[in-house]
Image (cartoon, rainbow, N blue to C red; front, side):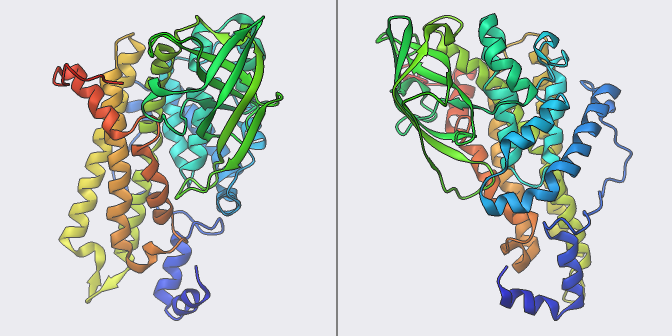
Length: 431
């Protein structure tokens, strides 16, 4: 905040106390939870007391090892991924639903969703996203289809938090249009020789390896791609830059170039030519993670806004006493609960082996739009304070905009939903 703004704020005792209450700085106490009912995670149909214990353990780690440093990392435009990931890995949070033989906890997928939701306790969007890439975006295909050798070399250290992983799909000319990627991996002897570039790579600058989608043949676009594990310390790998973004500041986002990079053909995940369907499989878990990870943060914004509006006076009464304000907050909380129900229902069906691509696309679409709507509405009630960088609502306003773009844009989600509804034009290609 500018010095002049700080000076004007200290002139008023009321606003000084509010500043201390809602500043993102670590010395300030948290806003109270305004839930009146007794709510327990284990009341939900997909959760038990064991899920509640896992979430409690994760929240304790977050409050000790992450939240006190978020402001510093946001200012630095990077968080120490190796340091933070090792703490998470040692506590088992990168192996929640991974097999015990690889260092995982061997729990079912609902525990991963419980973890994703609790990551919303982190007071920024960047670090939950970075954690999600390692836990649920770069490794699902490796677990399901990778060879034992690949799992030992890449999966085991990723679960332990000894390495940082990233996912390489998007390119300068291919984001949501996955089929249009240009990066190639051509066979030469026993190796693949990789050439091309990747863009918008979360964790890219700090990553030790990448789950890379590349064209391994010149065949049809949906049958010529493969997923390959690529170490990022090889000759020919160039980490070009950290992209300066509107939000998600503490998560590094890289542009990567590959120039005649050689990797053994044994680094291929599963079957050659199956990269596109493997990646579509990974996208399902990514989209469920995205929806789950914003629930607590949106709820926190609503509660903090209610508290702020109750304390702030205008025209002889608190802002919260205006019917529009308390009605609007009630509407937003209702929308959050509806999204939570969709996340839980999708999780339940996914665990039963059902095709949840439509529901995952619906919850991703809803999460992206709601994650924009909640901070926007709440920020308005904060007035000038909401336009500063000193309160969490402004950070959420910046961070959450990505959710409607990353992991498949809203328009792609709508196209998938239309396909399942039978309303997508038959003469058009979906991807």
